[in-house]
Image (cartoon, rainbow, N blue to C red):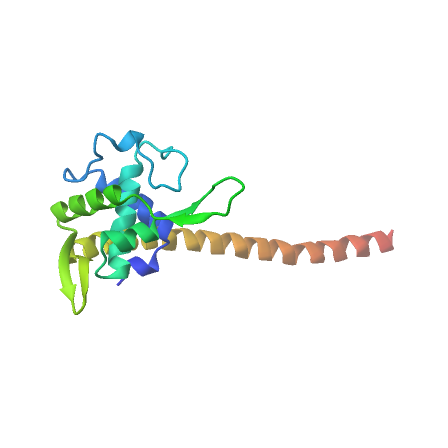
Length: 178
């Protein structure tokens, strides 16, 4: 069975973002086109549908990191701020974006709040796991379909490489006879 860990993370996030666009509970807030994703950023995101990519990334992060809260996700999505000639400092990512994304994922039924021992935060639900694993299996399926073609091309190149030395030997033999 293919899981989220078997697929390429960038492909998984882009495909999951496309699927999240179809879910009515997940939609960008009205302020989303104007906001930066953290204090360390200089400009807002360039992509118009960045909200879905971030939400898919948050869903993947919750799946990976177990019970996780907004604070830990802020540290994950943070980065170094360019402060001119001064030293760079690490700043956390935007908490409001992550909070709203988690709330929307919770409303859609992909994550829920849980406590595991001393750890508390949001974990992925079985619906969320199956959502990501289904997308990962689709990605793996398309990759497996492409691999035999690549093997055929490699075999053809190998055969061509084998033919060329033989042809050279034949040409040299013909030249010597003349």
